[in-house]
Amino acid sequence: MKTISLVVPVFYEEDCILQFIKEVKEAFAKLNHQYKYEFVFIDDGSRDKTTELIKGEAAKDPQIKLIEFSYNHGKQWAVTAGIKYATGDYMIYMDPDLQDPPEEIHRFIEEIEKGFDLVFGIRKEKKDNVVNVLFSKIFWWVLEKFTGLKLPKGIAVMRIFNRKFADKFLTYPEQNRFIEGIFMHVGLKQTTIEIQQRDRFAGVSKFNFRRKMKLAFDAIFDFSELPLKMAVKFGFYLMFLSILALLTIVVLRLFFIKFQIGWPSIIITIIGATGILLYFIGVLAIYIGRIYKEVKARPLFSIKELTNINE
Ligand code: UDP
Ligand code: MG
Image (tube, rainbow, N blue to C red; front, side):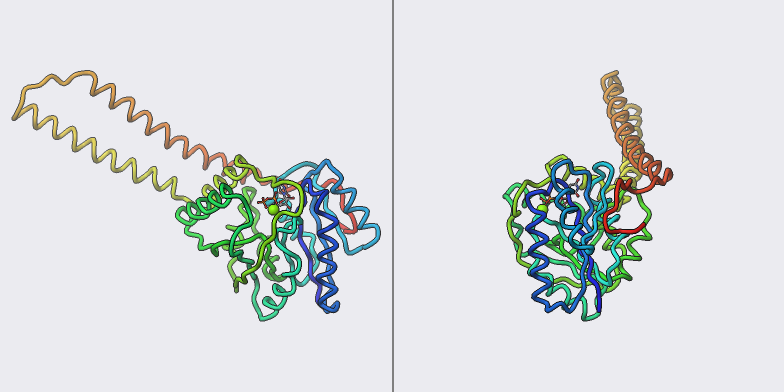
């Protein structure tokens, strides 16, 4: 019998977690217990009742497993830890807020059983407010332009993948982890299915504007060399332009008009050039910072406690 691991990052989800476990159990019961399943929860440093509630369930059911981070690392690292400790033949990655509904689980299983390595859930429309929807449209558009990653449109969190895919995923050692990018980079045989989404069951979204900006920033700098290439191109054009301008002035002065070559033009040139230089030194600094982080190669996460899991 095949085992399915549910990889679920949790961060302040005390209002959702029990309902989530209940609905997932119901979904598997409807599958006539053709599959074994386990929950792999990764607590990303919540300080509410989330872990207490999960541990309560874990005491009754050894298939409920919990990895507790020492402090908040961010969702990307939580997912990575979950995939590392999951033992299933297939893994379903989903959030516990029930935006991705458990009743769709059987469709994911049916689809991957056709021989795919990864099945993405695609949502028709995002159940979210207008600002968030607009923001995520812009985000994915910019990302595609910068990175050339062909991410499926309307990609949801919920997805299923097999052990082969998970093992490949875990060979990506990078510290700056843009999960969707890594998923696309792993590649293999992928497909998508359309799913219905619900509203968040309870609680609030943890991704405020600042966090979303950070994600966008990570995505661009981790999966694109475009900012660096832009610097080179821009610098080249500028050099070309200044040589042209110089020649023009010399020719004008020598052969056509007598004029004062005043200091304002010089000042403006200095300011402009300094600005451009500083800007691109900044671009370089960002990449160097990231290289530094990778070179340190610190462990990706710090685990405080494991429940129902042997190291
Ligand atoms: N999450 C996490 N660490 C964080 C922020 C969020 O593990 O630092 C989890 C959170 O518990 C949830 C998922 O990531 O399961 C997605 O977060 P949320 O539902 O708040 O975001 P949204 O669905 O609004 O994008
Ligand atoms: Mg959510």
